[in-house]
Length: 245
Ligand code: NAP
Image (cartoon, rainbow, N blue to C red; front, side, top):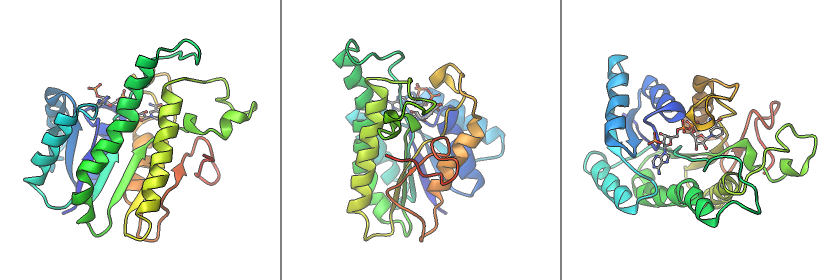
């Protein structure tokens, strides 16, 4: 049995990632900042016949919640094979660079960057026990600094003072983490699920949740000779699947 933890898995891309990993035979700890919402998501999966899953109260912006979640998982398993850092917030749009409050920017970084770092640090010892550990940091194609210099890029005018920089920082952390773990069996990658219809964007995205989750799951299931320290984005790079940073 392989074990996976997904943050923000009570709905949308996180929940579908849980579903697809369950279909692959994984046991899933379904992270949710509201235990009740997590329980409802688990009940939904159980009704679909996917039973190797349990809810885990985990607010990635709350250090006490992370500590408690780590203790709870540690009492059940000594090994974690997959960590999907999916929980994320946009902070609301638009986010003009000269008028977005620093408080809002801090709030977004708290979840999208410091939350990921805190959860990763809390669970790294369990991941180290896995023969082929995988960490997937869910990013966005909008985090590409290179493409934001290209006026012909289709998302050139979609800017933001909080969300984009937070995910660019997440990408930077992903590179550093992958580099530090380069001589181990770890694969650490950032994955853009693509512009997807979810609550995140009031269902404006053209992509489907199953397709988005499939991109995340692909990085969670990478073979031992697979890439590490990459920024996967089918939206930004339809031919190679690897986005410029
Ligand atoms: P979503 O529908 O808004 O779901 C976000 C999930 O994250 C929810 O489960 C939410 O929990 C959870 N969450 C937020 N803050 C949290 C916290 N502090 N602790 C724990 N969980 C927290 O968004 P989504 O579209 O599925 O997005 C998932 C990821 O994909 C995000 O990282 C997002 O940046 C990224 N992404 C999305 C798109 C897109 O077009 N949808 C594109 C690129 C990247 P609650 O239910 O409690 O709020």
